[in-house]
Length: 278
Image: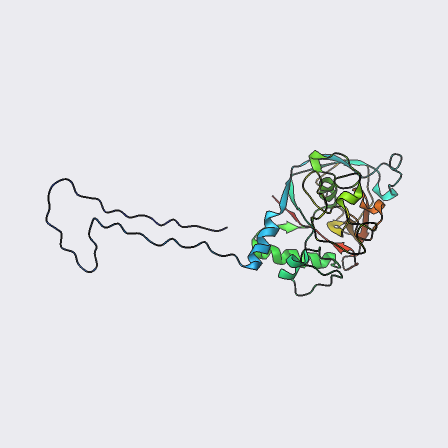
């Protein structure tokens, strides 16, 4: 936060209407009728690094909590896989999530390696493991004093569906995937700058396509039990991955699609976006 200090204007109080003898002044004092001012200090210039950090913070989108049905109905959705069922109710508290996937310029600011196959400052970082993401987040929290993290799987799907503004689209923001996502038929076999397709109902970009996104949870099969702020199982062998990527078919771009990967996997379509506690 920039702090601006306004110079205080010091005014000597004029004497009344009586004629007075001119006061004697010394070299260390000034006439009482003299108004003094200080030159206004220019605002502090942000460094390129600070601008990137500020962009990360300013592009966190507030997601109002609510309830929704997570997953897909195998009898109603011919594209659904068995691990997307059973549908069950989830209640979530409010949180923040990144407007965009984490970009390479953001990654490069904090990390000394970048294994991304498709280089570009505004391209999403990819070929990052879940463990890599944790290192990045730890460094980011140390610099900002905030509590960034990966979204839970439930938070991710709720946000991808549009939260309490959901229009119940198959893909995040539209039933026409080409308007909201980069995937096999539109990507020209590459990632693209974040935010170049249309956003979803909450103003979030690329939640269908561009890169798959890590979630915080250990992967597990669904149950039909209602849950509140689910965090996933306490242990496991793989972490949840969501969203589809530049080489995905339409099926993988659906908001209920879910897969998983080992924590140390740096698959060529794997990226992430940030979440933030209130």
